[in-house]
Image (cartoon, rainbow, N blue to C red):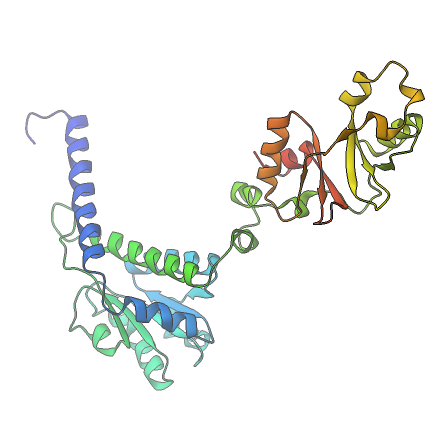
Length: 323
């Protein structure tokens, strides 16, 4: 690229690499390995875990695939093939199955793991570019990658091949997720920390329910209602009907709107009827959106019979990182 400035040259290289890898991914989608569906079913039927193994760059990709599988409902972990030859074969049991990755299919370090699987009749799912390789010959199911060129200028550095392997691993994970009907609440179980965990928190996980809730009856004098609201500190009180159902709420705004002669009124006369509520199973992010839209700071969580189970304050959501 003589005469081309460095920035233009770099952009040109990046665009070429991305186009080469994108074309390879399109080819993989069009030529999806014939054993893909069988591999998904075999993993679903497994009694044990899915053991992922690979050497070098394939190993790095394998670790990511194992992590994605484990976080989406498929028990899985990575075993380094060289470490397997020095005792870690004990991690692989007859109830497990193995996903082995080797672009050439001739990675010598996989030899002992292959032999171990054969000895104990452990199914092998092979991912390779070479159909007649040692790995693919030994494999029970074969996920053959298209023979696409590497994206580097010398055609040797693992680029396209690792991208294809990673994408195929993602395809496996998502196919397994959907086959298991994997739910958002299950996903949060494996992702309790960070922003992702906060976004998937439910109302039940953040709401207050242990301490007495700020609840009064329709006949409760407003003087007692104010004392109850002050004691609980949520800026809101729930009003119950004769059956114990939530029939209204009283907020600080309701107090201001009825300030004239307030102490001559009862809770039922001041309350906002048909209050907005949430269910404990809803995402806290949904409840926060309701609070923002209605310009309120707290919501009661109720059961199917409109009986209050807890209260969620906007500060609970903010403290948990729900935004």
